[in-house]
Amino acid sequence: MSSTIKSFSVGNGDMFYIIHENKTLTLIDCNILKELEKDILKEINEVKEDVDFNRFISTHPDEDHIRGIKLLDEKIGINNFYSVDNNIKTEDSDDFRKYYELRDNSDLKLKKDMENSWLNKGHTGREGSDIFILWPDINNEDYKEELNKLEKNEKISGNNISPIIQYSPKNSVSVLWFGDMENDFLNKIEKEIEIPEADILFAPHHGRDSGKIPENILKKIKPKIIIIGEGDPEDLNYYPKHNTITQNTAKNIVLECELGKIHIYTAEKFKCNFLDKDNVTNKLSTGEIYRGTLNLKKNR
Image 1 (spheres, rainbow, N blue to C red):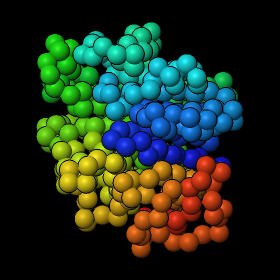
Image 2 (cartoon, rainbow, N blue to C red; image 1 turned 180 degrees about the horizontal axis):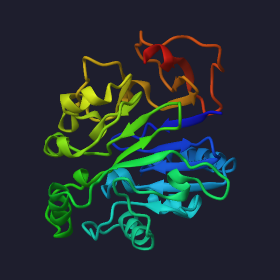
Image 3 (cartoon, rainbow, N blue to C red; image 1 turned 45 degrees about the vertical axis):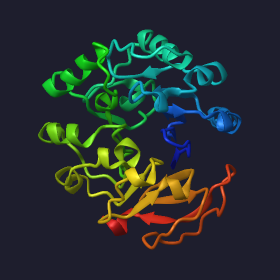
């Protein structure tokens, strides 16, 4: 069995999907730019045909994480909407109004250690989707302060209400997302979060220096690869002590996850000396080219 993770190249924003081993689909955030609209919707529609169930996880209500959500709901259908519990109404646009509608009509609220049949527990003979929520602790005072500021319409970003999400199938890959969480907030809650080791880490806040993960947390994660997003180059932290893939260079990134290994495909070539070669398909139907394999058994 295998699963697939894709990080779309959508400029200064985030959009991911996971095709799970149990034939479910997870979308994490969206930033559907007008020029990418046709290709992204076509691909997700095609992916959706091969799964039995889909969900959308919203890390936080900033425009570069919900742009195009109204269109996505119209064309694809968002049936199971996960977000942190909030009453924020900071912006007024079609996409923000759709976010508020989806949020207010769903009781799927992200919080530390949440259990859900389809998300991570299994349901009617089907295995769970191996998604675990490590944060937020809704009783944490620092988190509550960030949330309260936003709900009072104070002019701050929603970055620090982002959840920490782990995708970790048994005996296979471990992947972490931090949304747009910022460095100063991570330093505040460092002792309050339990962070496991991970093979792949998507750097917070698109890889910007403002979202740099503190060294004490990085030492716990021990990432094999850090994927740095498409922030402006002068704003990025390139994590020089770690193996990295920068999406500004690589563009679309696809991770095909098998037992003990991750096959990595990208739309554009990038400099790399930390991947092995394996006997796999050289090109995906979506156009990304095979660049190499991370052998987890060897790296662990």
